[in-house]
Amino acid sequence: MNHLLGKIKGDRIIWAVVLLLTLLSFLAVYSSTGTLAYKYHGGNTEYYMLKHVIILIFGLLLMYLAHLPKYTYYSRVFQVALYLAIALLILTYFIGLDINRATRLIRLPFNLTFQTSDIAKITLIIYLARVLTKKQDQIKDFRSAFVPIMLPVLIITGLILPANFSTAAMLFVISMVLIFIGRVRIRYIMGMIGIGIAILAIVILILHNMPEGKQWRYVTWKNRIENFMNGESKDNYQVEQSKIAIATGGIVGKMPGNSTQRNFLPHPYSDFIFAIIVEEYGLIGGVVVVLLYLVLLFRAVNIVTRAPGTFGSFLTIGVAFSLVFQAMINMGVAVNLLPVTGQTLPLVSMGGTSIWFTSLAIGIILSVSKELDKRDCEQVNEAIEIANA
Image (cartoon, rainbow, N blue to C red; front, top):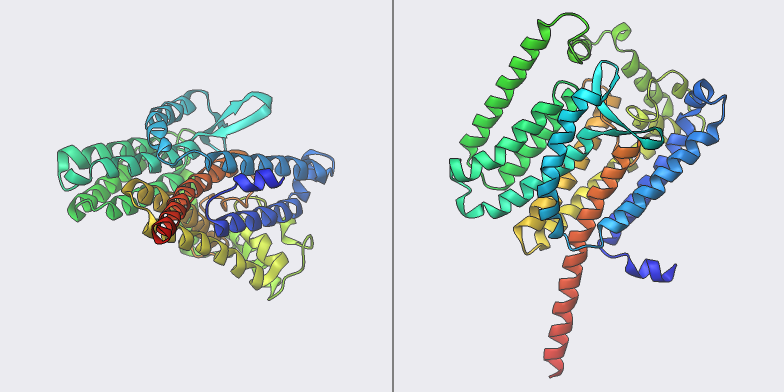
């Protein structure tokens, strides 16, 4: 055990945040899967508990393995992975599972499913970090820098869009933020946003005029946005149940395992897990969750300020911002600040590929942190040697 702990490097505060979120995930998922267990497994609540524990342990192992290599190795690996991600997104439309009028999953052996947009998200962010680093000398040029940067963004978000509007929109925003940080001309970014809006309008127009039953998720998007804008209780069942959970949680909550809204909320273990956390742990628990994600972002920014190279900086801020942004969207939906999106709470909500790719992303951040700690240690040792000379 001591030998293993000795090999764990990187930002210790990020490791602490991860362990706290993992513990919270175990408690919240176990509490919120009771109805699911009675529906599909005869009341065997241990089934989902054990399944989730295995997923969490594998996620932590993946995070540990991801933090071991030097972060620069990910630059070349994910350059190749970009083409794999595009191929998988296209393949999903042909062999993917059709769930709730959306084809976004591919079935794997042992009855496992794989959401292809998860690999696309992290792949695109790392690809952008690589290209922005390599193109810094020509970053203001449209043809040699902006086109190679934006083309993959349009392709990947365009492939995700028909089946998963919220993920496509979120990934597009994250890409724009990273490109802005990368010093691309503002007029190019504004033009790209205009193109993105135009593509979205064309997709909506096409889906709107397609025969009923072939409109993908268009009807769901439309209903969710209209229900959110109207604010009618009868049309916002999920959000109303979420608000009840939050309101009845009070300051300290009902204590672990005592949620009542888990029996009424659709997907209390994933999309609305934050509502269950607030119901059981109160306002204090909700604030702690928000602070944990903000601490993760703060530590990432701290890593960026210390990173000597641009790739490490772009990589860290891009990955960290994507995780925290997704968390804020999930929590915003739970408190009715945003329309229902279906985004999970990173590292907390139940789900295999979501947790695993989140773990991979945090492992990459820790890899950058580890190299910085190593560099700082070498500089201190060198200074000591000079002082003793």
